[in-house]
Length: 204
Ligand code: HEM
Image (cartoon, rainbow, N blue to C red; front, side, top):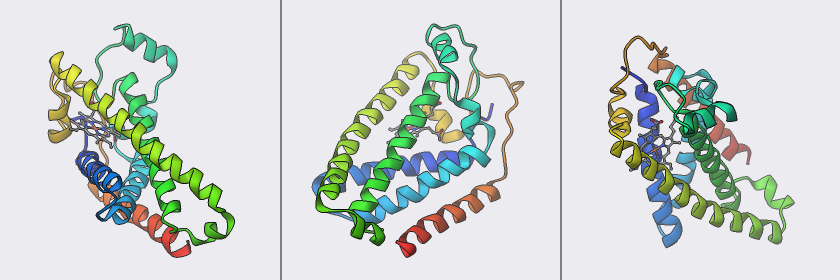
């Protein structure tokens, strides 16, 4: 059955590509690190909005579960359902939050929000720089755990990667209907996200 809409799939693979390019340009200290970071920021703003107005499997409300449910899932007492499982949902939230914070510290360090330049002294900027560096290392650990988990699921005969490309998750019956919103809405949300970034850069 269909689990991921086209917009979420494009977002995911674009995010993975930008992440790789940002890690390479960040640690090497060369390449278009700042423009790539601004693009990733726009994408993450899009994902935050899509978590509220997007298709069912992408909405935060549909996959953020309480600790009881997560424990039930980890003990193998949770039924198989489409989309993120209760533990994977929290990992997705953690990665999206870490990427968002990483983009914010980068934007501040790049001096793209000029009112802050008058407020921040050198010590503040040093702290933000250390946070940005630690964030990059933390994200590398998280992404390694993420890809590791996907490989474990693959070994357990659950091909999640295929679903992130095709949108279709096997071994689930079509009776578990999910709702999908139009891709025009995804484009409108992208325009709003672009406007958020643009106003941040113009006002800043
Ligand atoms: C080879 C690399 C990667 C593979 C194979 C992969 C695969 C996947 C798959 C299969 C899912 C869906 C999980 C599920 O069914 O619950 C997913 C979700 C996700 N992945 Fe990846 N991923 C990769 C790289 C990355 C990278 C580099 C990042 C971040 C920098 C990332 C961030 C995310 C996030 C945030 C989600 C949640 C998606 C959402 O709900 O919007 N992934 N990934």
